[in-house]
Image (cartoon, rainbow, N blue to C red; front, side):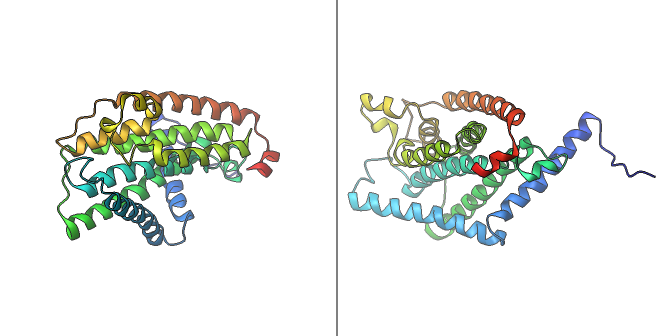
Length: 274
């Protein structure tokens, strides 16, 4: 009697199987960074807190706090720093996902789409928990947290994550072909966004000739729009949420096409370059 594994052939069954596989792989990715899931969360929170404290003291020493936005300065920092961290964490997580030459791909029904989705969701899970814990701490210890329109802030936060995933998918598709160059591009992009993301200033305060230096960056639009939703006295004039949406959809399609092409040409010998 031969052993035969039964697969769900219906559309709903396939979707449920993929959802379960994605969930299991996401849990694996969350625990992969650190053996203790609680410590992984703590370390991620500490990184965000160090950013917030460093920028808080920097703005305090420079005396530029009052010239930014009238309102809770901690919320101003959180909307900039957390969207930046979520964006680059999502990019890094997707870029480090298992590729078509990974041993994990030899186990059906595992595929690169599930690997990418689980990496992206694990980054979102850790960042969201960290954000929730930090907001709870600020609300409890410092002063009540208030967003003028929190659904808008949440959508911009998810947009920062999604745009990071889209960029990561394009880089992941190119990584087997030019691994060293992709590593350099990732590093340069992360460093450049320390300034180009606009987390240290507001777009309305920039001279008009400087807007074009940052207008290409979807994260610049998302952070500025998030502050527009967070504060009732700030109205973004130079940014919008439509550009990051189109950017994300476009790069997502490019990433999927690139992943499909790479899967057709990848070989196990490329693992030496990954």
